[in-house]
Length: 454
Image (cartoon, rainbow, N blue to C red; front, side, top):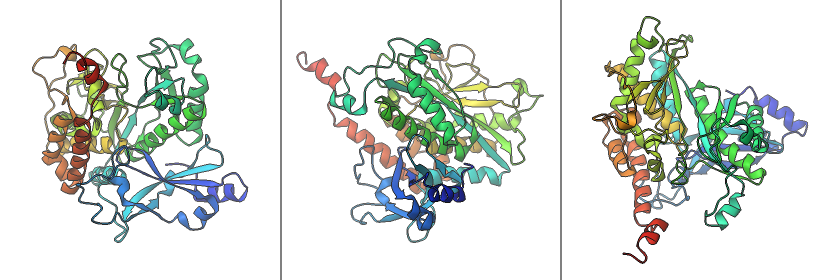
């Protein structure tokens, strides 16, 4: 929750510090979509509600109007949804002159009920399930990305070939190299901090030009909100500096993938850590055993929400710190699920499956749904894996393709119960379209491999 209020906004508008308000909803890809309001009009009436075309939660990454959705179509006329600003998310945006931003819930234009397949509504439903059980989830998502010494326009004009990375060598934890990138990274850290997102650190990551930004954990909804704003902010700040950033999960075969590791723990509504038990092995409570068992039991079913694109699956390669096995292990970065903070109140499970291209609302919701199922059914946790998980034999694999993950999602009784049939059918269509679009495209690899020799 931001500490910036509508009264603070009114004062800033009256005194000339803010002239623009961004009212944003989050689309299926996790991007911010919305309108730029003249600030005076926003505080007069738009803070109550505004409207958007309902196709915004039924398009692909290219904004293509995709057929096959029950919720909206050309036949239905692509009408409006209501965007209801959540004033708890209102904040100044320091890197944009005179600008504030607020996130909106998406409501049915006629009933004013939340649109069930909107990402924020999906996560809020799982948060409510936890609240009804007397619990709340804290989460933190680490975001990795690549920084390029080119503008987005230059990268596009080159056909995304011969891109110039911000560094020429692996810069994992490298202070001197990241000093050379501080113009961008300092602007990102201070900008996010000024927008009410408490930043912990940035660092170099495992490949040339690769960065990571870490912010303080928060309740699940607040962290998803932060995540969406962070990604948009990083791009805007890099653009303003004449640079480009990509959150593509695997931008180059020879480079490491970019992840979004998700740390998660459950607490009581009175802020008691429910995963910690000083008498349990590693400090794990029986509740944590059940929760992690749920993550593992449904690991294949939830993979689509952690890896939503064709490219997402190119990241799952042995020896790259991206997992290939959906198993848990104690402080082991080769496993899909890593136990962190053992024997402390900060004990948590880190999901290492998701890439930097995930939608945080959908990913968090899927993880919570799986964990809740483990708790409700008191699932028993298997023994932790020991050793190099890449070489593990006879253990649970992460689906290796979007096609495989889509089948697991659409056939999941757990997800259909947690999210609703209409929601799963909606995202099944999204996944199918992504696959269809890829299947009919000709890649550079195919042409180079077979132009002469086929």
